[in-house]
Length: 122
Image (cartoon, rainbow, N blue to C red):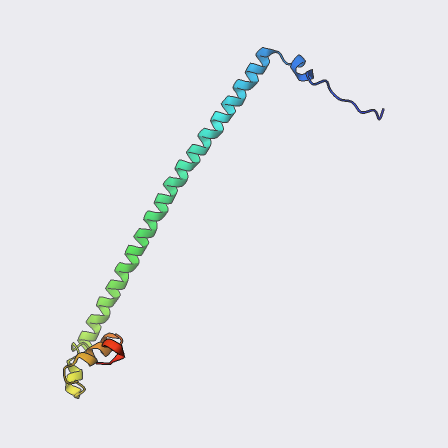
């Protein structure tokens, strides 16, 4: 029987009654409402999790900054106890001070040489 066969266009309409179609439409609406509610719930949870992750990152950054500050304080204290932290006075003792001291301070701070107009150097 290799003959092509097509169902009549109103075949399903004859099978299902109006009451059955209403029941199906209510079930489909309910299913759609449940899926939308699930999507909203997932979005809320994702937002809540994102806030928690952000708060955790901020805490980690604050703690790492605090540890770095403590280590810097510890190093400063060690340098002060060993005599290296003289506030730059040792340089003056060595006789390396310039006339006004500005150039040397700029070098010590790691700044570039100050320039005047038209490329003149100080």
